[in-house]
Image (cartoon, rainbow, N blue to C red; front, side, top):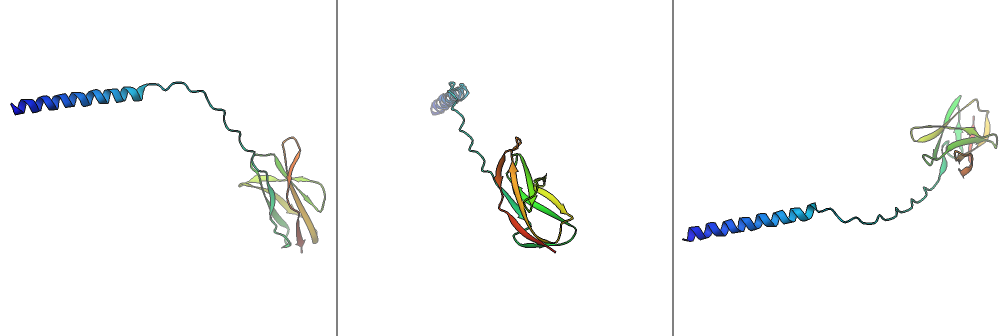
Amino acid sequence: MAVKKTKKTLGAKLAADINKAKSEVAVMEKPKAARPKKAAPKKEQQELYVYLDYPTENEIVSGLHYAIRIGATETVGNVEISFDGGEWLPCRPAAGYWWYDWGYFTPGSHTIAARLRSEAGKTLKKAEVRHCEVV
C-alpha cells in the first residue's frame, strides 16, 4: 500500500507542478497593457569645437608642402582656413579630421586661423590662431 500511496502522491505533485508551470507561462505570455509613451528626452546639443592640430604653435615649417590637420565637430557643416587674415579657404574631410594642403608658402612668420561653418554659411566656432615660421 505504501507504493500505491507514493505513486498517487508523485502523480498529484507532478500534476500540480505542470499546472503551476502552465499558469506561469500564461502570465508571461499575457500582453502588457499599453502604456503611454514618455516623451523622448531632448538630445543635448553636441558641443561644437574646432582646433588646429598641426602645425603646432610656433612650429617651423619647411619644404614645398604641408598638410594642415584640423579637428572639428563631426557632421556639422564645413571647415575653412585662413592665412595671415586673408580669404577663407575650404578644407577637405578625411580620416576623422579636416585637412588643408598648404603649398607654395612664402618664408617668414604666418598666422593660421580655422573656423567651423554651418551648411547655411553661419560661423559656428573659431579655433585659436596659430603662429608658425616658414623657412
